[in-house]
Image 1 (cartoon, one colour):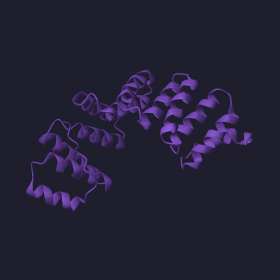
Image 2 (tube, rainbow, N blue to C red):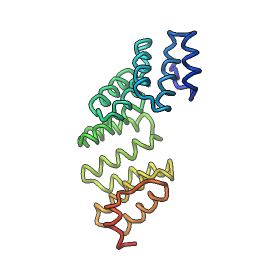
Image 3 (cartoon, rainbow, N blue to C red):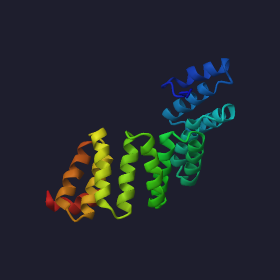
Image 4 (cartoon, rainbow, N blue to C red):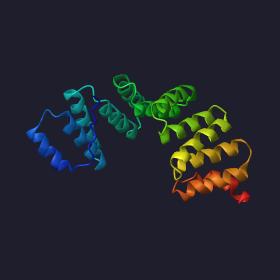
Length: 207
């Protein structure tokens, strides 16, 4: 039976008190890490996730969290390795595959990104970020139509997901259709997403 280690936000003080009585509880330690991340106490959070793994090495979520902290520090390679470990522990856990794809995109390895993101979506077809990052990967490979198709799937799931609109706008720019691009950049802005000002300046005349 699969365990769920994320029981929702609790105060750091309450979790530390609970850990005092249950020092070997990996679940409590993991949730402490999550709460410390919420408080932006990243160094202590990292220690909590490392302790979680020491207590129970099979908690894939802890590796994902360590990957997120590595990304926050700009360490792409560490982020990649932590998520690969999470995927190794739980091959059918979509999140690390999505993160692996995102890191590969940051490393300008779109082909590898596509493979990882397709794996993520095969495990969780509702994974909005994976749809959108896959759209970015297709755009990076010179296929704007595939980008539009993939990001449209993200919008079907979440109509207010700004990055997907932004990607579609970029794809239409790539297709030399700035009027259509502007429509999607406007939609992205409506969701609160900040479109690159230089790109907006480029299409301003088509408003």
